[in-house]
Image 1 (cartoon, rainbow, N blue to C red):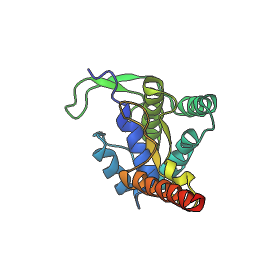
Image 2: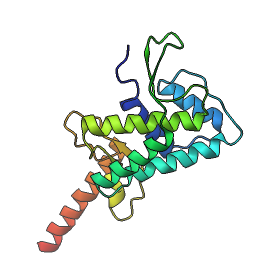
Image 3: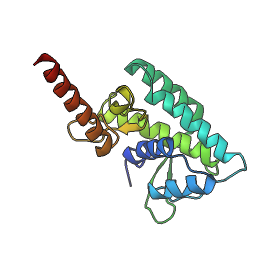
Image 4: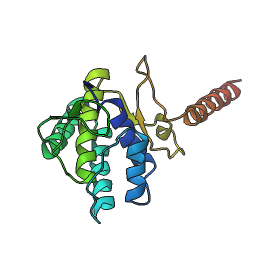
Amino acid sequence: MHLNPYGEYAVLLAASLADDWPDDVAGIERRTRDFGMTMSFRIAATEHARTRRMIDDWLRVVDAPGESDRAAELNAQMAALAAYPRLTDHDGEGWHLHYRDLDQSLSHVLGAVIAVGTALHLTTRGMHRLGRCAAGNDPGDDCRNVVVDVTRNGRQRYCSVRCANRAAVRRHRARTALRGAAG
């Protein structure tokens, strides 16, 4: 039995959807499979928009100004989506827990999985390990990608090597300009 089937991958899935929103429901479903979800979902015509709203709600957790705010927002989302945990054995995965009722819609299932996964990520790794790319804090840089810190040391600030390099170049240029102005 898998003890934590909804940990890290659920938060990484949410960040992937937030940063690169699929054009249609089929794209959302493909992305869920890319991140390890194998079960089928009930899909209604409104699922694309409903799933987008769920991701926008999750982004309020990402953007919460403090740990207590983040916890309160996440608690509210989990309460709204919760179903009692149940053991399941589908798709040859072996026995594991689902935090949802059977036969729920894609948006509801993803909401529950992502909320529980986010809670597990934050409580096991640290409440600070979710945020926006630090490159976006620099003037002129519009990166708003989500950073899910899964590093060993817990210091990931950038969504990609590209953003980290851009920020390093800006810092270097600022130091060089400062030295040139002082000299």
